[in-house]
Image (cartoon, rainbow, N blue to C red):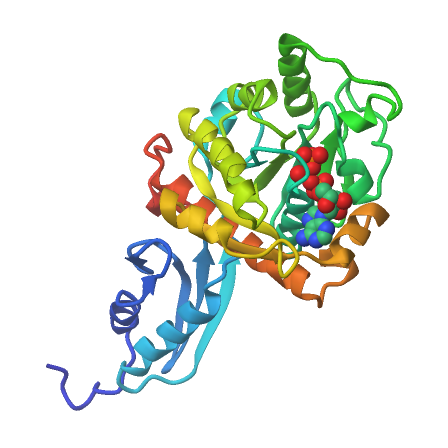
Length: 356
Ligand SMILES: Nc1ncnc2c1ncn2[C@@H]1O[C@H](COP(=O)(O)OP(=O)(O)OP(=O)(O)O)[C@@H](O)[C@H]1O
Ligand SMILES: [Mg+2]
């Protein structure tokens, strides 16, 4: 029992006890045991601290702030509460061990068949993550039909440095594509081993620098390129893009099963081109049936295509549109899921308490 004299004295212990009742909604553990509370300072009865998130694109900041304030309201005598935010993206340790690149997480974007919007999703996802403050790279692994340079509005990469390629940069995203290396009118014919070494080169012989997320845009299908990629680097997870009609679901399922077979975790399913024209709902149904996360629907919108054609993706060109909002929400869900996958991966030997 507290004596009358210090009844209204706010202590660090009391603040920590209150915050230990606040649960991080994705990781399902409290903020104290996750070591997310940093720089706790108490000045009289006023409290300030930083919440260290596992991604700058955290969708649940508002909830965590609300819950923290509600918990601290219960501390007798509490004065003002000031919350700062910072983030430190957890690291998929296998990537640096096996590849020697400083990528914290790698995200493959796939589908069973062509033309469903993999590149559109990859580009808008990468830009949205960068807009949230993450360090993002985009690898165009569609060696046969590279579309990333066009959608990013850049047709050349900078001159190489120290015999390594330097990624192009636009909208805060670093990216590399076979489209920079092979002229667009030259037909590309690859055999399996060449494909493998081309992908490895785009991963290794590039000054990527440090990245929180490397997004990898895959070619259509479930063949050599997917296999080469999965062998060339550890994938934190894969996003499966599908169209909303029933006939598209089988293709998406094939893409999903292939990554499951390769033991790549499924981040979730995105339904693209949703709306009156192609319908809506098949993506969510597939996600429920397969027991994987549904990451959201992106509407069919001519401005999405125009943005891609013009080299100014919709999240930049029409940031206020519904489609742009859908991509932003998608990017937050992806970031949250990636944190959960990476922190839950037993091969990542460093426990969360050690993350600093
Ligand atoms: N939500 C959308 N609304 C309208 N148009 C879209 C949408 N998503 C993608 N598109 C358009 O559809 C076409 C195909 O998209 P995209 O190139 O991203 O598909 P893909 O799956 O990468 O294709 P490929 O298999 O050939 O690599 C593009 O012209 C793109 O601009
Ligand atoms: Mg594509």
